[in-house]
Image 1 (cartoon, rainbow, N blue to C red):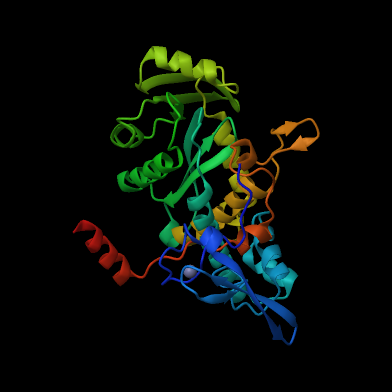
Image 2: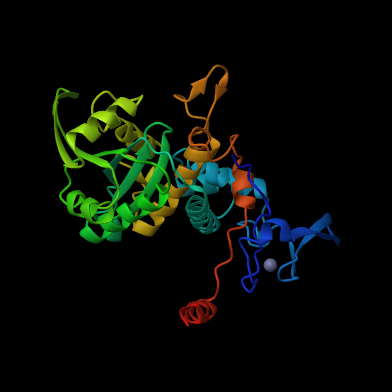
Length: 349
Ligand SMILES: [Zn+2]
């Protein structure tokens, strides 16, 4: 299991090896005198540059306190609107908008780097209508949850097109890399799932079942199941390994959809602040997701007196993280476009 490494990556975009060598290459450098006290600087042995503790993190060049920033993100993930957060913190609404966009993008980068489920057992997929306006009018939030760990594995906000369904399935495959075999995927009968799953998971040994629920008086009266990928024997094996489900179902992802609606002001029913663009909704949900997966212990993952977060249950971290730790993490610096092209060309010859 990992412990989070705070200064694991070098923030210098020109660093020859920002992600790999940096683990041991970043060391303490010097102390800098400022008006508000001593500040630590760090240095990277790979590129010999020095930088402050906040360089490359979301707190870089921020004029308000870190704690105000953390509180703003927490309030949004408890369902408060931007206007309400601005009033509570006495910060202008445009600052809050800028902070939340930055925090949402950082949360997405944190997931991209840390969300790995090599031993997935059962995955449930679903889409939730965002009820947005303008550009986000027909936006849906696609999500996937790994049932055993309750880990919210993937998230994609967009219209329900073939292209978006494909991007979503590709993201899911990237998270489920590794040793998992014959794991079970369930979803509703949305028309694009079948062709996309065949293309993306065609060579992966998994069992894919579509569930169609018939409702009557707020309960499920009947549910039809269709085996799309895999054999009935594989399905039986997969069901035997699942500790949570006796039959293929979509109950866990529907529970997560409720959490999304309650935790994001844009997704509330009859909200005064509907989402106006897919990107804004995605940023807001990425923040909800980082709190859900890494920070807040999950009610149903209680073992004796210890409550685990989904990331702990999935074996990604060995303790709950704080949001400050996540925001202090430095994402691996992206090479500039020109350098990337040169590096690709160099590797081809
Ligand atoms: Zn470096």
